[in-house]
Structure formats: structure tokens, C-alpha cells
Length: 243
Image 1 (cartoon, rainbow, N blue to C red):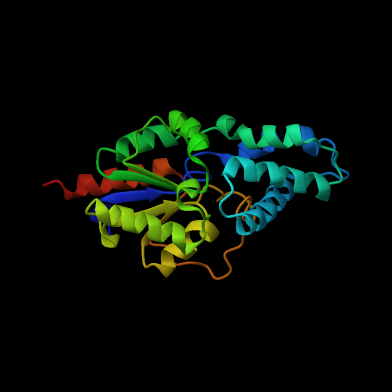
Image 2: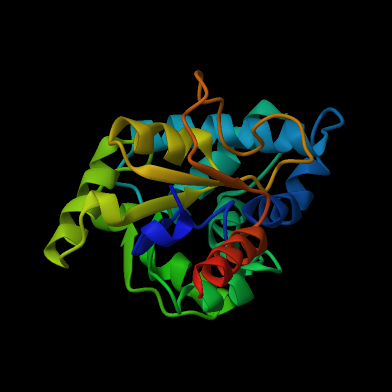
């Protein structure tokens, strides 16, 4: 299997292209400063991941920015920190400030020359619009949880993407699903027999951060520690293929 075997890259966005963990940590500073105990970065991210997953399951049609407001409220309760609903709402709107990983725009611009680029994200349309500006590339299709009415890792999200790509003449064998989260993306990609590429942004950190433990390790077809590494590997394949 080679990177050049595929026609379409379907991306998770947050954690893969956008540094959502750094964005969360920064936006939660006013709340964590009021917590009733010291919190490490991983403490914050893992607790956030727990409440986010629960809330996504309980309210699958809730817009992501609104769902984050509820997560903020649950975090405040768990950490014994006072908050207001206005602060909760502000946290939900902080997605617009989450930074892109430094290598994302350049790598995407290179990959755009060789693939169709597609987004499958749990974030809502308005919030993704802010992130898309930071990524500085035009995606060929964008599928959000707001469009679908459920959150990854629900199979419905992947079925929705696959069915809509089929309308564009794209089959599952053309797709390389490219993501950081083993829980949200690689496990369901395995279930649907999609080839997958792990962008292991957390390679130098312990645990799963703001995602969740996937249980059994999913099958991974390619692994890179950054999107820049992916682009470099593709470039190398292209060079070898030239006569």
C-alpha cells in the first residue's frame, strides 16, 4: 500500500489540523485558576474528553459550540470552581481562537495538488469556518456533526461521508482517512474497512489527551508524527515513481 494509491484524503480537523488541546487549555485558564486542586495539562484534557464524550452521546444533535458550554459547566462542578453561564457560552465560542498546527497550512496546500481534501468533523459549521481560514485551503467537501445529527465515533457520521462521496464518484478504496484520534476516527474507520493514516500529534505525550482510550488498538496503515511528515513521504514516493 502506497500513499499514491488514494485519490481522497478525509480528515478529522481538531487534533489533526487544528491544535484543539492548546486552544482548550488557553480558553480554560480562568476556570482552572479557580479549581479546588492543582490540575496538570493532561488532567484538564482527560476530564474534558470524558465530559465531552458523555455530552455528545446524550445530546447528539446539539451544536458543538453549545455542547462545549455544557462541558464547561460540568468541568466547573467537578473542579469545585464557580462559573457563570456567560462564561460557559464564551468557552463554547472560543473555538474561533484555537490555532492551526504550524505545519497544517503548508502541508495541506501541497496535498491539495495531489488529492481531493475532505473534512469530517464533530464541530459545527460556523466554528469550522473560523478554523478553515487558519488552514488556508479550500476543501472539496466538509461534513460536520451539525449536518449529520450525531458525533463521531458514531458510524452514522462515516456512512454519511461515504454516501455523499459516492455521489461524487468516489469509492471507499479511493479514501485514506487521516486523523489523530484513535477513538473518534481510526476505530470506526476499521469497522468500515477504510484505509487510515495516523497523524500522531501526541507522540511525545502520555495518554490520549482530549480524546478517549479506543480500547483495542485499531489497525493503522500509515503513521506520521505530523502532516508535514505525511507530505514529505508523499513527495518521496512521487520522486521514486519518476523515470
